[in-house]
View 1 (cartoon, rainbow, N blue to C red):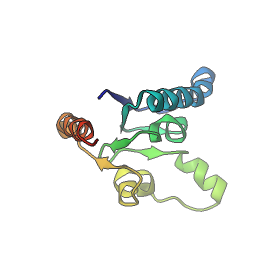
View 2: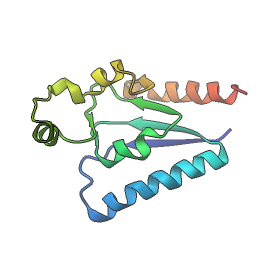
View 3: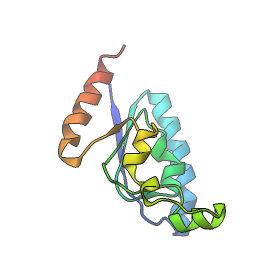
View 4: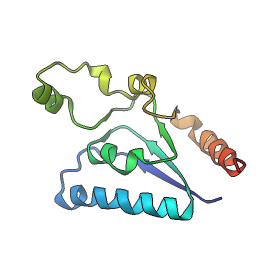
Length: 127
C-alpha cells in the first residue's frame, strides 16, 4: 500500500499561473491516485481558501484539518457582498465546519504524526 499525503495552506492564490494550475493539479492528482489505487490523505492547515478548497484539497480519501484553522472557499467580505448578509466569524473556522461533517478528522499538529501513522495502518489492512 502506498500513500499520498498533501499538506495544504494557500492564503491568496491570485497569481495567474497558480490560479490556472489548480484545476489541472486536481484532475492530474485525482486521476493518478485512482489509477494507482493510492490512499490520498489531505491535511488542511490554516489558511486554506479559494481554489484549494474547490479542487484537490477536498478530493482525498481522508481529509484532516487543524483545530481553529481558517478554512473557506471565499473570504468573508466576498461572501457578504455576494449574499448581502453577515457571515459570523466562526462560520469559516475548522471547528464549526467539522461539526457539519466537512472533514474526517480534526487533529492538533502535536498528534498528527501518530494519527497519520494509524490511518495508513488502518487502510493497509482494509482488504
